[in-house]
Image (tube, rainbow, N blue to C red; front, side, top):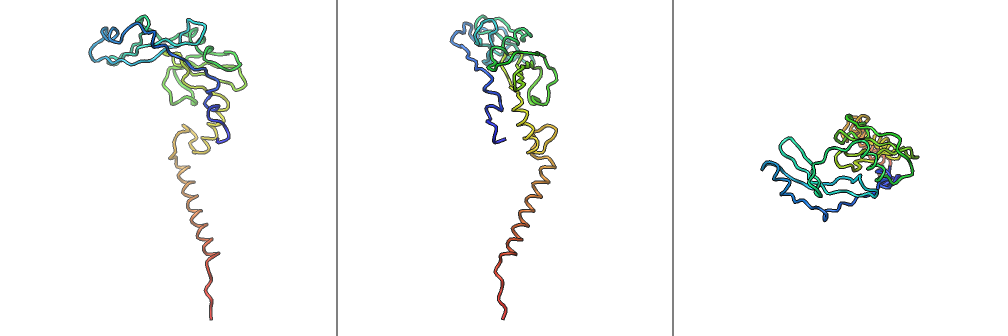
Length: 206
């Protein structure tokens, strides 16, 4: 695990960064909140702009009102729905910095083990490069939530062996790990005791 550069494990070299132009916002937060109740809260986010040839993101207001959530363009005030497959393909292609092509796009309601810590749904975009790269894309923002490659999968396999969690690969307190750690500690103590017995000064007898 120490041999693999962590940026390559995370796939950062395969993902282009996104810039959001908040200075272009033409709609104020108060205009958006006026359409909701007093309990509504607003935060700032963004969405990949799939209508342009260059990689860019539009500023977005994210509103939470009770159990409902809404997204509005800060440029026009238009309410934004989740991205469809054609937009996801464009967003994935613009953010991809590798040398492969898109071979599959799927919307996942149940997530695989390699992104089990994220929330569904997500779009999975697969590329045919030498690392078998997969982008997992947020359907609301169009941004890449995770990059998974064969390098990451090798790292994850070694990590699984290291912490001895063969199911979720995240638990540091599995019975196997506790048992082997305790055994190693006992072996260390017995080794110290044996060294002391071997090298301790012998008493001279008359």
